[in-house]
Length: 144
Image (cartoon, rainbow, N blue to C red; front, side):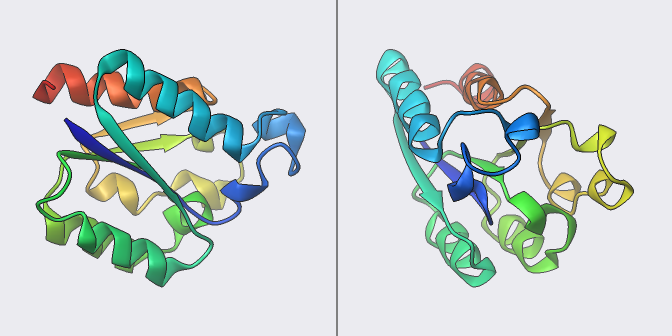
């Protein structure tokens, strides 16, 4: 199994930004956490982060026929990006949406997610563990 984890805008600032919401863990620690899970499961996981919407679209399009699943935390683009939604729909890859915080308990504008219009599963408010839950979901549903 080969999975792609996509992190959007400002997730590179983990460990610096709003620690009361996102915790002390850095983006590099998140990637290491995900890669450790990949080793345990004996699967390949590629991680990508960008603050640029078009780069996220490009990496989704390149995932076509190269990955069996996508895990995406689009950051603020979750609430604004029809083009990321359209890119996900165009590649037809099983997708799990992840958010470190519970977007349903935050500001009103964060409660709507374009990604949710495509993603088959959504995990919110479980911190870094949410990414592991997303990996487990894809493994259980689609096998290694």
